Image 1 (tube, helix red, strand yellow):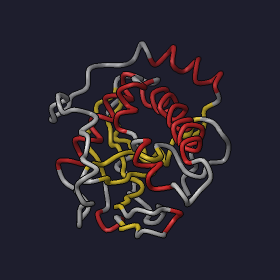
Image 2: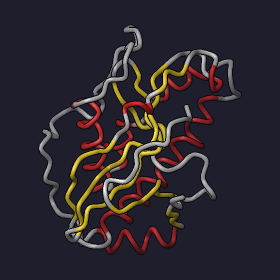
Image 3: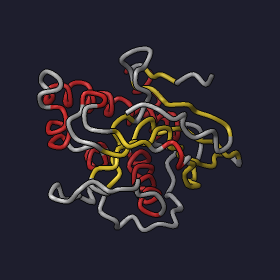
Image 4: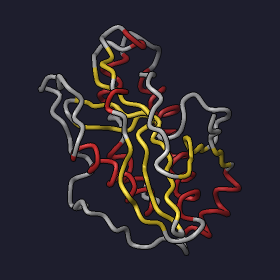
Length: 215
């Protein structure tokens, strides 16, 4: 089993100082002019099939770009919207707005810094695409996982990159398709061994996408 990499606040600060010297322009075949918010309309129904293909790859390319820059404001536009989370969880859990801010966004901020430090502290890096298992996508029915609204979920989409001539990858732990747009809901693993920034499943090569499950 691949162990998640964890970063304390002190270690993150030291790693980020080194990482700032190692960032190089990304070679992306996709245009980064694509709006990172790509806002979906809540008046539209959820898609009947998970939107794979160019839309998912483009979203993950934007996420990679924001990790490279260490840009929290931009990366947060790729995160599951608070209004959608509150709508989904109201009446299902206590204080969904507080849970969103204190847990979901709180971990995302720690993870973004951890991914930035891990990926860019050891030399120039080139994004090489994603690895996803389409069979892992699951429709989460209303009533499952303390949710009142259904949605598509896919776990363990891998960001593939090349560093120092070696192909490597890390996972994005959990994505939700909301009205046809993919959003990150967990960047690092959920749950995790401790409340620090954590890298999900770092691996040599393209790694293994998934595993299936979660919500």
